Length: 276
Image (cartoon, rainbow, N blue to C red; front, side, top):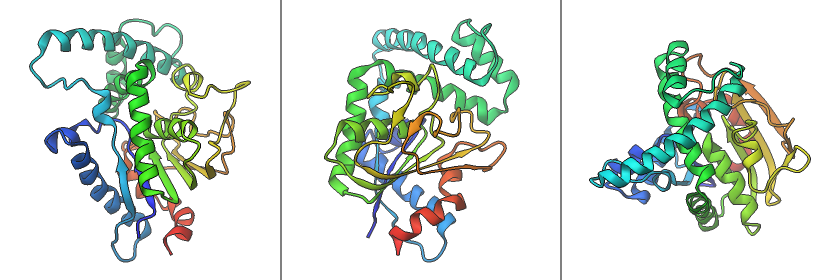
């Protein structure tokens, strides 16, 4: 019996389009991949590990492949302003200095000059979706509800949340105190990213510290040491209740994908008790 619910990260809108604009279809396609990725880490006989993937990417997009050009242009312009603000704050976290305050295009050019192709592609995806989640409260609530409904429906013992999904899962678990999980595993989490995410969390941190959601019995955070989304990679300095913190070295290029994180041996000892 599958005992895990997954919460995906950034850049998964293509699953929605490929499934004919079906969120359940996107979630089903992603679940098959996540089962395969996790099997690479755990070995043994192939099985269904995930009961369901909580899919929310479509809620952060305006259907920008459609025909409503004027509405799309206005939405894109507004989103670019928000994305620029996120990227500038992100740049400061990377330690590039206060001078990086120009427009989104200038910053993207700076990033393209300094990062390899895959990292640059990741950077383009990262800020717009984070900005959409943090600055549009209607979208934010819908994303949290989508994740909460999947957890409530499946009653998993484990929730594995990747990237932006760790932020959505964290807030969903706080907003729904009826939800209880034995283990929350966050992978490549930006929860502690100052000036971008941390200060904007709901509930807001108190005296500079967040806290493990009340319905979570145990919290494990795993991050690649070079993951530019997980800044800082360790969460214990920012959150009370992180039981295990583990830095890993996944791949010097492919440092943030769900495939690499789910295939990481570091997950094995935490998941084995639930899969026996």
